[in-house]
Structure formats: C-alpha cells, structure tokens
Length: 144
Image 1: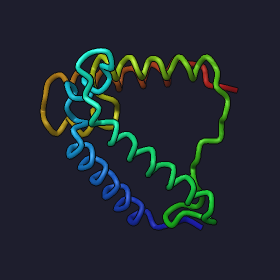
Image 2: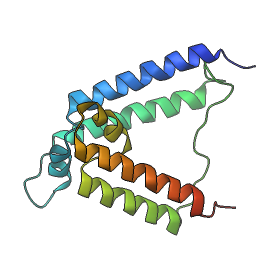
Image 3: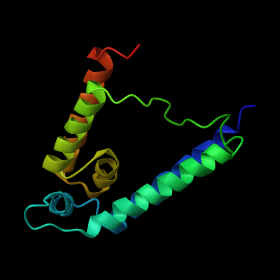
C-alpha cells in the first residue's frame, strides 16, 4: 500500500527543521567548536559529547521501536541497514569521513544547515562534499 506523498513530504520537512534547529542550538554548526571537541589532546571542549550521546540514544530508541513495529506510518517498510560486514571499504570510508570532519569541523548534516549562515567556507565545503559524492557514485564499483 502506497502512503500519501504529501504526508511524507511534510514529515520530511518537519524532521529536517527539527534536525537543523537541534544542530543550531547545540553548537554543531560552529566548526571551531566541533574541532575543539575533536581535539582531545589540546583545549578539549567536551560539551558536544552530550549532543552526540543524545543523538545515539534517540537513534537507538528509534531502531528498537522500528524493530517492534509492523510497518512505519508513511512508508511500506522500514529502511534499516542490513549489512554487518566490517571490511576495508567501510574502514577507509569511516577514516575519510573522520579526517574530513576533523579538518573542516563539519559533517554533511551540519554543513547543509550551515549554508543558511552564508559563510563562504561552508559553501566551499558543501561543493567539495557534493563533488566527492558524484565522484564516488560515478567511479567506485558497487559491492556485489
């Protein structure tokens, strides 16, 4: 059974707005603050640990609820990760993500939300991020 597209779009918009507001209120849009959190050997700022801990708790609760429910309200099925393999591609991708996060102080969600601030560095980050996604989609061989 197909769910109404309008309801799905409204739910996506509200979810995105709540996510962006949470990122803004938590300080995750400030690359200097993020780098301060990641700098565990220097002037470490542990405040974002609470943000990340809250995000993990919400995601864990959502995953548990999804496993107990028969079907979501606005889709035909849940789209949960199925792969459990930790291979070199996963490790390399995680390392690239982490290095980029540490250097730039942004990851994809906060970078997109930060576009609303109009900072040139954020615009360049998003352009580079999108270029990397395009290169990956065009040239990286999918898993079989």
